[in-house]
Image (cartoon, rainbow, N blue to C red; front, side):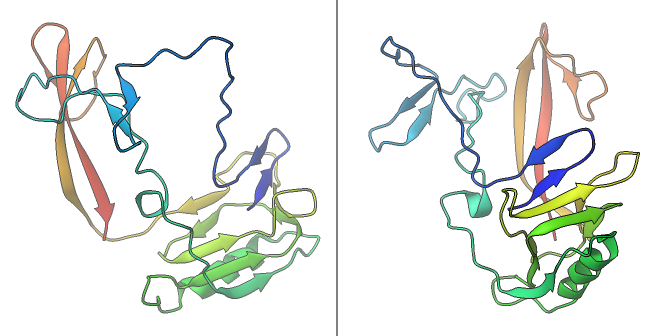
Length: 209
């Protein structure tokens, strides 16, 4: 884990995120929108789809069950370390970026991983965005506490700490029509006026090749 700090704000990055729920004194009421099914998994009430009443793709409370690595429910892999970087006391941007680039140039293994860049405990002074432009590269810290790894964003102007993006093309693998009511969709590409106050918008999920 890494802790990223700047002059204005401090952020703590950790996996997994812990959501604390305050326990009330009254017994919780059963919800019609989200409830436990016979298999113990969450079920969601689905509203009818006005465009296709026979489909099961109507509106419902957002389901985050598939969020996370490999759709969730899968342990994070232990990617072998290929580059080690320690803090210099000065500007560490070039050293960290060089290590990232070195790992990015390696050939992916059978699982698609190239390797990890391990940042030693201490404070790394970062003056510009760190770029990860290849898949299979892991940037790993040595803990998030005071004795762990800290990325200190320097300079008087704000900038993106870490940019992760690739090149290539994308393909549509799923298309769903969403029925929205009472929403201002002005400027949305593909949005069209529906009956009454409702509008329709087709959403596409895409992935990079």
